[in-house]
Length: 381
Image 1: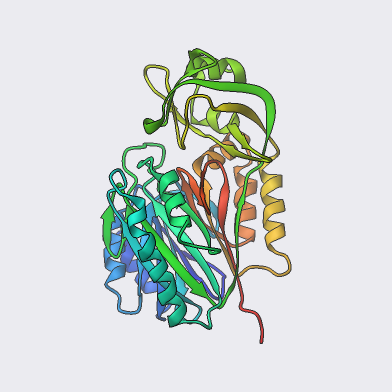
Image 2: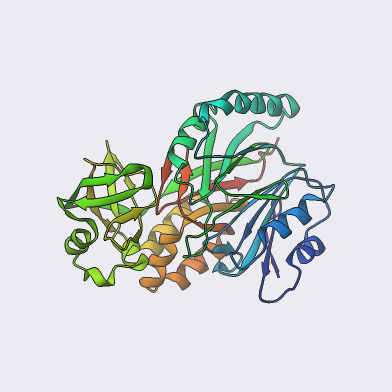
């Protein structure tokens, strides 16, 4: 069990290897104040339903949302087999939450008016809380993030959205989210919040496109599958272009040899999840025939992280930084022996969060990014 040093947002990290009842440990340690909402991030080794349902029963907690992870980030940096809890006090935050189920069948426009109504209700409830943000948790195996984020963003106006796709370690079997004590698959939960704290929503990656091109000549978009690249079988052709034996393709290789799609002067990673038995490549995000991709060149991931966190410290240090960090970044850090340095940086800057199967930022579903929110003390009167 470890507690954070932030003064406003309360943070707790429970080691599942050291306790029999993580929910009881959380309740014993969590300060007894009124919380607008709790975010719980639970390792696949933990029981998301048991923990979330126990916490939801507490009368001093308005909302409890959470997800299974592909790894956790706590006061010591990157970790595993943990439960990370972030408590946002009602003295500084007010929130509403909305469960969105049946993502494979949902007409996303059905809930647009509901989101507008939720925003208006929060504004009427706390007009003195002038800063607003949206946070989205979505089943990381649903393959519905793109259309969902696009539909939600049309109802948010200037409100910034960030979020993460839930994970399941590297098993890719079940990636549930939790809402008000219940666990759901093929679902998402949207949290709208207003705060008197200053906030900064951000998204960063450490890649630049190279000259190595890949043209998607065969794809099954609804399954995020690429069958052919450059009119050749997808996996062997990708391996040839990045200079790797096809038999050695793995999540570590995908993390260290990402591919990007360029849109104007912006570039977005299209991360590979795995090689199928038929040599097709399954992706973490949308893909289609005709897409022109390029292999990306990476800067040093630790140097880039240090620069990002230093920038967030201007003009003052945040109380806490909450991030959705792609699992491929963690794998890249392991592969390049940067994990220890990155953990030290995350710890130094009070960064908490989880490793994801994808990240959401405003209208985009992206991969291999660090996406999150920095929360600062309120402005002094």
